[in-house]
Length: 291
Image (cartoon, rainbow, N blue to C red):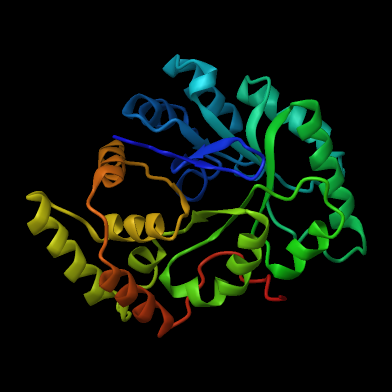
């Protein structure tokens, strides 16, 4: 199973598939599932300060016993009531994770910073500082639209390596300006909520398209192929890193099987794009609408 790496704009690399501890695992003990994911072959682990389970992710890493250099760990900054400096919050996260550094540290959302002029730029400078210190190998953002990206790119020493956003066919058309700007700076897109079309927006124009492609892949490979796997393959064709989660260990093998699945055809990619463009559905972070 090839969880191939994608090169980032700071010359580090990021595995294409990640196991996340948000959504269904929010504020829950994720230790056993993290250990299971690592043992299954998923070495890219995605968490956040706001998820409330960094400590159990750290426990899962320790229980798996995988060498640190073989793991890729992400956490995300959230502004707290005490307005602690970025470095202090990361040091606290590292203690919970039982790590000396994270591979990727993201500003979780710009919402907390856009109301105060200059604050987003100042926070980005602090992000750059923890990268220089080696507490984070790479730094990036999450849920950023073009306006917020431009604000920090204007004076950035290091452009964000990643923007983690809700990414699926029902938001793809709306994301095109963001993706175009990211392309100019080599910013890789990470996807969360990528399975929203089948878990939250059933009954839409994507349904028959995904079902048809899943049947074609099942016939081609001789084994069952799900609509979720079709969406993962679509993301792969878009050059996106997939962050997904599950509370079912059995799903981990399904996700990993997708890494070696046949590619979608150009016609299939176009059909998914066209069906997704017929409706707009966003499940997460609906408050960020400015461009």
